[in-house]
Image 1: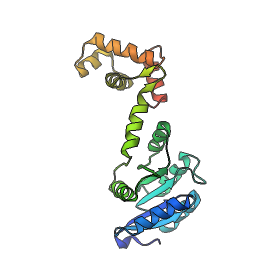
Image 2: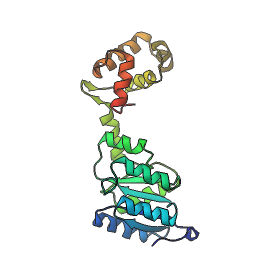
Image 3: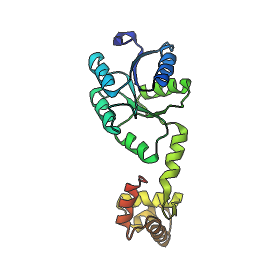
Image 4: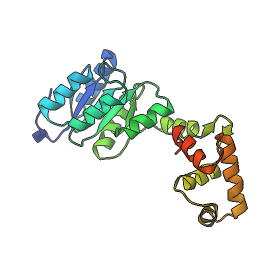
Amino acid sequence: MTGGNGSGKIRILIADDHEMVLDVFAMYLSSASDMEVTTGKTLEEALEHITAAGPFDVVLLDLNMPGMNGVSGLRRAIRINGGKPVAIITGNPTPRMLDEIMNAGSSGIVLKTTGVRSLANAIRFMHAGEHYMPLELVRERHNAGRTTKNGRLSDKEMMVLSYLAEGKQNKEIANDLKLAEPTIKMHVTSICKKLSATNRTQAVIVARDLGLI
């Protein structure tokens, strides 16, 4: 089903070891007038297709299929797909996994429960150079990201934390946020307490480990 670039269609490669998911996705996308689909069932098969047919416009890889080894398979595919979008198909990723996937350079995350029409739109979106993530994952990531062992960080605390990560002092943060310096000090104390950190530097390190910033 591979074809030359002369067709003007979006050339898509989908690799997934769940045959049903693969068939449903491929069948629907192939019926779209602007898409052309190639499929595979393992990472190696996907990489062979990319090597043989040149970079695809959009590559979708199942996170848990043979050969992936977490995000290392994603990185390999990105490397040989010539800078064109490579995205992940997955079931129900944890916030930490989402961060790993996006930090590895993925152009997006497609859930296996995604409706086929949404899938086609997601592919067009990534093809246009955008990053795609379903709204429910964005919400989940946002909410999970703030919960620490000792309670949730408030919007203000998240904002102050982002300034701490830039190495700004209380006075500068107070000026930027148009708040009194003692108020910033209070927020910093609260952030340290919630993150079980003894000082602001440690708070930033802990926050990075938790994927908050």
